[in-house]
Image 1 (cartoon, rainbow, N blue to C red):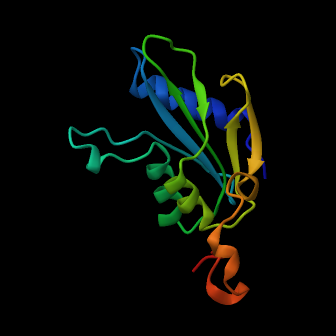
Image 2: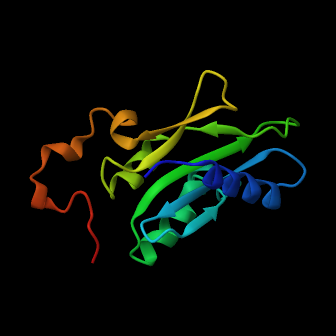
Length: 143
């Protein structure tokens, strides 16, 4: 699976719905069954209570026991409404790694408005989960 323009557009549309005046972001994930879930970050006055944009979409897939196959996160900064791609942060890499090293993620090219699809294994090069036997529960296969 790869990240495609349809998934990027779903994230951009969610960001524009939630933050119509400009600054703000969103994420979209595609699952093994082809469903696309979108979400936004949980903004809070206490930064410790905030969540990444991807979290809601990842949890929607997880609640339905539907493996995430691709993920993208976008943001718009300041008054510039041109969305840019954000690569998954470390904690989101951990969240996505639940479904293994082949989950596709969007990463920015040198120009952050241009993106590339990469398997998580290329973005998370030294993932600790590879050190465990294949029957250890990683990657998650469902159930």
